[in-house]
Length: 288
Length: 332
Image (tube, rainbow over all chains, first blue to last red):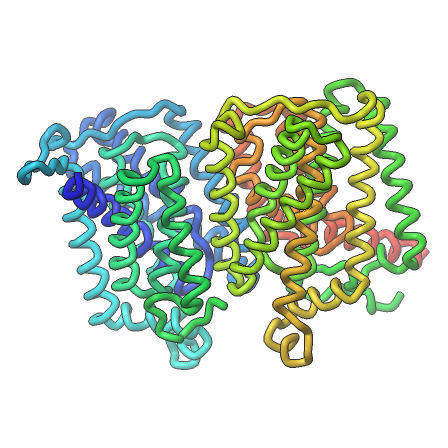
């Protein structure tokens, strides 16, 4: 029971980390709460499903197609909507909800509202470690997250573009003064965030079901990860995602499954009361 | 024609911002709101049952978003938890009546409960700013929605509960709803020109500067937030009375979000913003009767377009129209 809860927690935590990192990136550079990420995940998942089942592409190729759609959609949300409200913090949540409604309902109109499942070739397999069962899709999720986070970490730390993105997220004005092209960093950040959304769809779709509102509720947890981890902090988001996954998994097993999402909320409350600047705050940005 | 009425670019149009609609004194504003209330009452009473019920729902939403207008419109704090106060108002009054309280007492108890919850949420999250406040309050709304869904002993879960009717007859309720909506608009008009309103507007402009010049920002935000919560609960009491039954899906976590959208689309910080926004958000889907997919798709597109193209919402578009007409008239 205990070990199984740990395993479930790590799987859930990997998902939270993957989602949280994507949000943290766009939130960091542009200060928009990108609720539309959920819509990008949904459409990426449907793309994979459609390519795999209707167009009969091999699963791996269908996933790549889904990732590309995720990246392009995410860039489109930035180019067509978010960039007009960059300087209006009150308008950002409204625009985000509007885009989410548009994307979710595009999925509803195109693919219908039924719950369908994205089934990779390894869907039936599972990893047995003693008494602990981890389905293969869970293992794939953990592996995807690990690789994606490592790649993103290296990209942000070691490449010129990555450094530019971090500079913009610390202080956009100062970065612009130093000759960093803001627009370019916004587009790149949103593209990466869209790819991460596609990865989340690939990892999350087979575990649960694919339907138009599949990612809405799970994205709320990702926002806790973003706030807990500190903005633009990939390490923070990864650690907090895992932590939150374990916490919710244990909460669901030992307290109540119905209130699972609330355990994350409780942690958020505690953190804002006890450590208002975030657990991994660098002091570059204030939240209170 | 002088250009002194030109709105400030970018900033949200506030009730106090120079605008041709605001050139009249306070007495005329209140008189206008009262006339509007009477007009709305006539519409509720005289139209057929379908339009009347759509209008009543719009007016109840006007009350809820009118409350939200204080913390979000004047103070610039994007509270996404208004739906929870709305729910507490509905469930609070219904349960209090089931436990044998008279209707008027149950109203006070429901409003009191929502204010108390508002105080707690406000104490925690008024320490945060901007998007953090939005996320924190949205989670608070989710917490309340989960409790309404899962505390079956109290709320009967997703099936909901029936609400005892507290008025003498439907005619009375049909008077109370427009009256409460007009009163909410009047309260907002009143608060926006009193110390609380000015202080909230200073916080909207620059919170650090407000603190420097001696505005007690923490206390002001808390007062504004609790007032918003209390008014939201009134709307909840009325929706319970009007519907006769309530269930958690009426108060799900995204309702607070949609209320904030309604306020932004109508015109945050403006007296009539909540009415226009609610009419748009509640009325359009009901009246056009679109299938949910296409309807919500179009609704989403319109939110985005309105917010991008008309930053101050419908109210600022209305201002521009009035200004244009006035200019044409002056030229003639």
